[in-house]
Length: 208
Ligand SMILES: Cc1cc2nc3c(=O)[nH]c(=O)nc-3n(C[C@H](O)[C@H](O)[C@H](O)COP(=O)(O)OP(=O)(O)OC[C@H]3O[C@@H](n4cnc5c(N)ncnc54)[C@H](O)[C@@H]3O)c2cc1C
Image 1 (cartoon, rainbow, N blue to C red):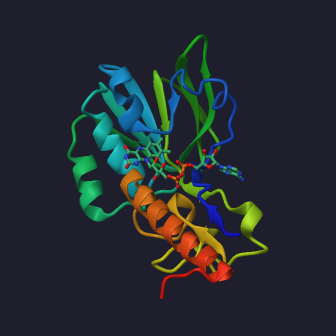
Image 2: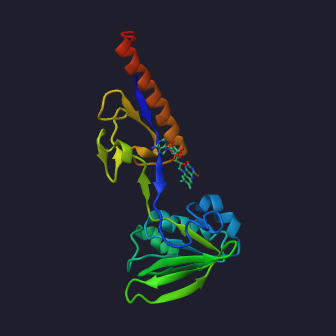
Image 3: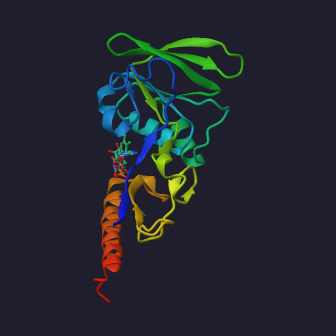
């Protein structure tokens, strides 16, 4: 028998009031999926890394304003992305700030923003809250069995073999550079092929 793990990865949550309640009603983790719903609206983007700045820039194609909120006093994103963001007239930057609460009725109407310096809170009216504060692999169940790398991604070789013979892994759960559908499906094919070879070897029917 062989096993292929393809449990993917999940977005990190802010875990603030309103985040769960307004998911799909103004709260989103995907600018490419939901950006067009916010044409001429004010939105905020939470995060300070490359993906948050990239997604914020993408949102400027639709939104009236995009306010990037980051808990630290400077962004972690690469300089070129920061320059693009700062030069975009639709972009605003709010540093040393966190989202304390997302409020609304049927849909999001705004957020309470808390300063990480003096704890003061301000109310900001927005229609959309896009959250990009990281990605975590769904691999908790594998931690005691397989070798993990980075922040819990499954270590494999190029043939999708993990540290345990007979167990293979593919897709976003794997430690790799690019997390995309096209890479996940290719790795799925490679994992299936490797798993088949492993079973054939166990049965003594491997083609040599
Ligand atoms: C919001 C969003 C937008 C994206 N947009 C794009 C895009 O435009 N283009 C692109 O190429 N890529 C995009 N991606 C990335 C792409 O979706 C992933 O790279 C791809 O889906 C990874 O495939 P996967 O099979 O590894 O994981 P997934 O597609 O995430 O599938 C993992 C599955 O495993 C299940 N699972 C998790 N844990 C367990 C468990 N313990 N037991 C059983 N099942 C479990 C999950 O419920 C899920 O069904 C996007 C991702 C997100 C989140």
